[in-house]
Image 1 (tube, one colour):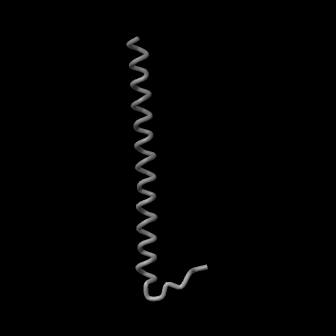
Image 2 (cartoon, one colour):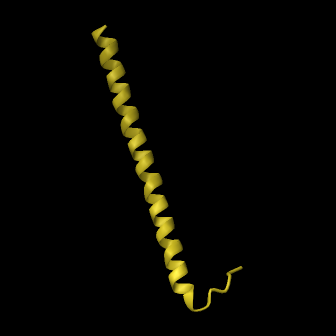
Length: 52
């Protein structure tokens, strides 16, 4: 079920595509950063545990 965009179809579909790519990038960056922070926190907790 594709809506009819007429002469603007290329522009609209390109905009949707760019939006999806940007959203995927933001989600990936968030997940990667979250994993980095989690590792850093775990390392810090281990240092605190070892230092007493």
